[in-house]
Amino acid sequence: MISCQIDKRLRAAGGEMQFRMDLQVPRGQLLALYGASGAGKTSTLRMLAGLMAPDAGRIEVGGNVWFDSTSGINLRPQQRGLGFVFQDYALFPHLTVRQNLEFGAPKDQKAVVDELIDLVELGGLQHQRPGTLSGGQKQRVALARALVGRPSLLLLDEPLAALDLKIRLKLQDYLLRVHREYGLTTLLISHDLGEIHKLCDRVLVLEQGQVVREGTPSEVFQSDRISGKFKFTGEVLGIQPQEFLFLVTVQVQDQVVQVVALPSEVRALAVGDRVLVASKAFNPVLYKLD
Image 1 (cartoon, helix red, strand yellow):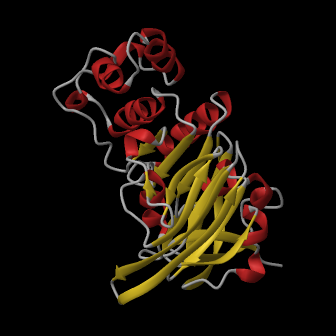
Image 2: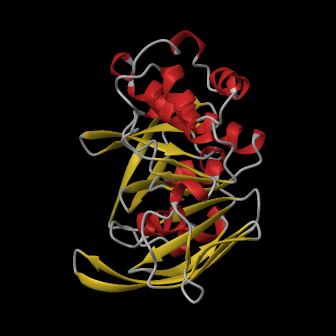
Image 3: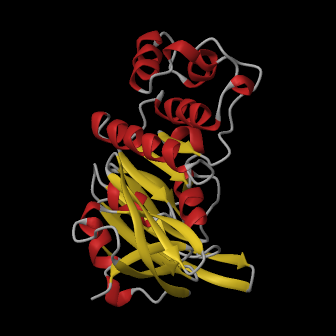
């Protein structure tokens, strides 16, 4: 269980804002943090990780106090037993894949490194250096390195945002697999609604450092709550399955766009149907028109 009640005065693009988080996350849950840039999502992860100190409050994970402003407790990041995956990989370029994992592994834990190399399918790449790897391969290495210390908490800051759709869907499967097999509690920052629906048990929506909505992905993103920045109508040209999701090709006037959709969204769709494509935080969402 993560219990977190923290306050922090943050400097945002529009000036200073008061960040306030009262968070309870059961063990084993995969929680999404969603909201516009500057809402406080990354700051939440940084304060949990010990990379930024709250002004006041308390963080307790699994019965261990990581931060308490009243008692003067503020554990260093390496004392917190967590894994952090960044969008930019943060790998050591001069080390091989295996050496990157061994660097963060407990002493004499070769079996853990072998297990993770097998889990995220890095066997054929383990003796290569990061500079020779694709973006998706680097992200698998970053994920494995975050897990090598057997963390109780995994923090993911938009780890798949820079990848193309096919690789992103594949790595979502890896994330879900390691989350379940390692019994992790995971916090994920994502702007991808399909990704959140696929991976997450619960969503917190942040605005200006405050939680303004929370619930399951379906509860949070149901259509009557989506006020899109733009909306347009079009005709479905194709529906292509992509593992757990679908890629829907839509013609809008003289443009063709592709939208990632959930099985529940495409169940009633067919080629030729008219649909409404709405955007929230630059993520398109489909609605069939009568």
